[in-house]
Amino acid sequence: MASDGFAHWLIVLVETLAAFFVLMLALAVMLVLAVWIADRYQTGNAVLRNFPVIGHFRYGFLRLGEFFRQYLFASDREELPFNRAQRVWVYRAAKNADTTIGFGTTRDLSAEGVPFFVNAPFPRLEGHHVDPKPVRIGPYAREPYDHAAFFNISAMSYGALSAPAVRALSHGAAKAGIWLDTGEGGLAPYHLEGGCDLVFEIGTAKYGVRTADGQLDDERLRAICAHKQVKMVSIKLGQGAKPGMGGLLPGIKVTAEIAAIRGIPIGVDSQSPNRHLDIANVPQLLDAIAHVREVGGKPTGFKAVLGDPAWIEELCDEVWRRGIESAPDFIIVDGSEGGTGAAPQTLMEGMGLPLHEALPTLIDTLIAKGLRERIKVICSGKRITAYDVAWALSMGADFVNSARGFMLALGCIQSLQCNRNTCPTGITTQNPKLQRGLVVTDKSEKVYHYARNLMYEVGIIAHSCGVDDPRQLDRTHCRVVGDDGLSVPLIKLFPYPDVGSTRRVEPRPSI
Image 1: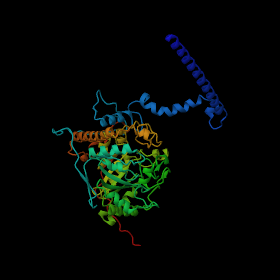
Image 2: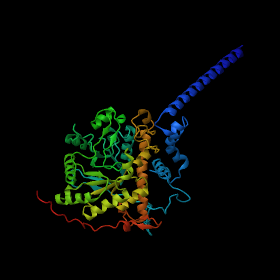
Image 3: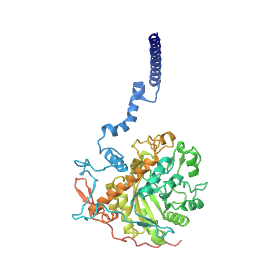
């Protein structure tokens, strides 16, 4: 009897499922028919008009192709902006896993532009790496900043990044002894949470320190600089992703909290001006630096992308007219290969000097003008591995900032969705469901390990080159492969100018 009842219910279930299947099949046929009619008679797309329905597969494959290539088709060394070998090294360094390799490198050592370093014939017997010594920034500020770590977190604002991402960066930076640049989005409580050193960035919209009409609010600036964690202030003139264009924060990312921190309306696209309203020339830039340094008491400099370097020469000449204390305490030079901010492809790919040209240009100008010791140089732009950073130190940088390197340490999979609020790893989205995937306690440890392991390996390079501090690396220690497959020393490509060779400055004409 029981078996008859079970058989009955089984028959009913099978019939129900069959009916459901037929219904779904009918709906699918109707949907395909509707799409076919819509495609066939629309006039805006030739592919869909000629190949209704199946033409949609082309666009799906185009969309998915950029993601599948990195897993199935591309080799370890051919992807951009970062290839698989680079990303895997960062992932392993962030996990504090073994970063050694076997059976030789897959890096093409004869490719044009590849740097490598000149080992000393008789390195020191003690240890395998060397540690950096502190460097003083801002000797004329009321609160100079002494900092040893040469590898730090570049500008990424809260809003562009999620709260869990900023929290993880803050905690990880504190443990690693490195600074975290707030980016232009203002100072959020998440920046302060971990207790790390902070560089407060003032963007062209002056988020966080703005008046209602977009001018600088001295009281807000004074309050921010009162935080002991805020060690320096950076005035952002431009960034590598979009030289000459202000940043855009889509309204979908402007939550109530972000709006309050930035001083902007909720849910409305926020477009920053292309430049600071009060900075239209070099004298006004130095005026702004002096004012911010006086109000906040912290070392103050600026961030820029170099185009024509003549304006840096003009700045140096103006410094000597005013007095050496008027100089910016630091300059952050961002290469045109910078890319954390969403930007028009034309600007991201075709505007500004890349770092391999901009950095030596800036360093040599400061040397020739006699201001190299006074003005510290920080560089950024795709420096995510130890030899990338060692190259920058050899070229003359005092510090190297990285944004995307630390995004990879947070778990970024290079899905290229930073500007869509759909980041699958929770790093660049304000969607709470996606943010849930980023566990602060786990990712902060990876930020810490990535920073420490990278600096340790730069220390290995410096030890092998026979110097006592990574910042003692210079252009004699690095060679770069030319177009003939042979390497030439950096010192030959970029010979040092004579110190103060163009320091002479004509007095400003009286008005």
